[in-house]
Figure 1: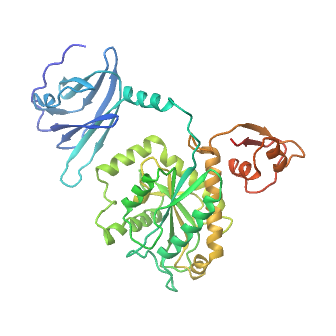
Figure 2: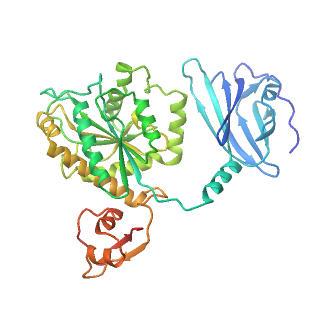
Figure 3: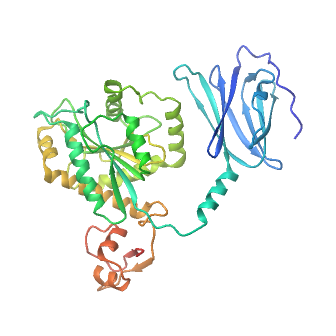
Length: 427
């Protein structure tokens, strides 16, 4: 590829987007370049090999001559060149030391920052080395899947109030503890509570705690309210990056997100740079799709113990669901503003029913989608059920327990059907 001429100040400067600055930062496994802009931009990116290069095209854009020289050579980039393309466009070429995986996204104005184009160059060579290193050595023991349980509200934030004075923060914590106990009774699963007592946590702190526990899933428990006391039923929500599925979902998300405005000093309702990046990752990796799958499984179980207010998983911009790479759902267990449902929410028996229903939904999901390296993802083989088989006889044949057999296959009864295929758990 011929060397590109230096990019001059273009004659279309009055209408063009201007690159005001370029910033480089190094992170574990990738380099990040941030192009500070005076307005929005259209861009495209592609790679070339022999030699390895990344090409960034910026439509109707100009840049001061020599600006790319501010980014010096490093372990990943040998040099950067820029030039004019199609009279009005800007092309930036990154000559690389080796192959990378590029990712780019545009950020809108936030605080004192204006428009920014972010280009991440992921070091494929380093990633391969890390994977290879992890594969060396003794085989690791299979781990449990981790379910983070978030009891909504707490401390100075009571949440919704029932007609009899029941506080949402109280019943959500009670249900969270019952759910923790129920999940921990199942082989291959471990529950962790985001808050164990009555204290306030900002929404971002809840996300951070789930990440600290390396959670594979997060469930946020709440109790809905509505001016009309006749409103009743349960509903489940997942995150949306494209707007809410209904006006109700939008209003509910705004109400839940407002907790930080009322009681904290962090406003996660504002999409700052970190949140924008998180949303990009979520939509890219399919985390939201997994959240919807989890929500469907829980909803199928909840309908047996309570009226379902929304028959499908709803979506909106809930801040507490924005944990990177952790599928998350928010469950409105019932309407605390409905006297009949308020009474049920306070009932220990009903709380246990809610916990059991959620646990079944979680087990059903992980029986299909458990992360690699977990006990629930491993299998010593498959067995096709024959007429006359029982769980006891199959467990004895494969030297395992009935409890393990049921846990590995998310079985909630002991009944079997001829032709049914069971996963035989690893002992």
